[in-house]
Length: 41
Picture 1 (cartoon, rainbow, N blue to C red):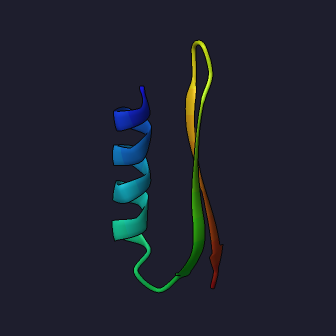
Picture 2 (cartoon, rainbow, N blue to C red; picture 1 turned 45 degrees about the vertical axis):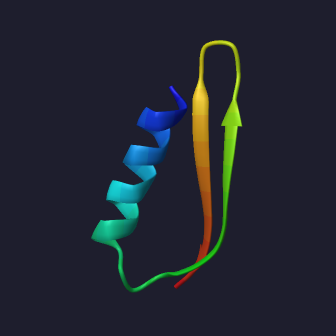
């Protein structure tokens, strides 16, 4: 699950090269993995 969430985040970042990434957090639960991207435009 984590690998899929990180791949989705990397794809999103590639589509938005103009943003400045502040932090990337990865959270994993029992049935869910989530990657949060904190950024400035």
